[in-house]
Length: 74
Image (tube, rainbow, N blue to C red; front, side, top):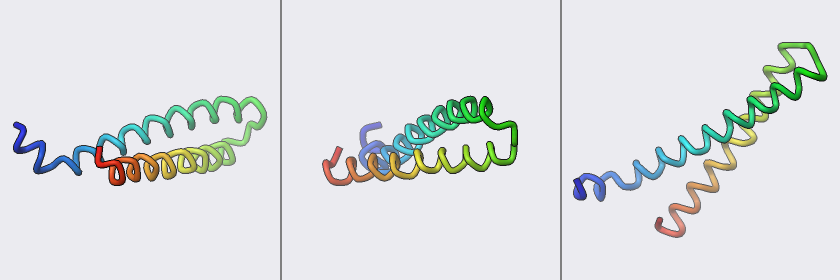
């Protein structure tokens, strides 16, 4: 098992970072959708705004986790 882990270590760490970033983006988007729907009833604007917020959370967090893993060698 250790041989497999050492062989695919970078892929495992990248997938872990993708999952963590996705979870943060999902919950951030859900919170934003609830708050935005209280102020505006336009569903299209809500969907587009939520996608922008989710990507604004997902991409930087994935980038920071990836940099952390590659530079620190975690």
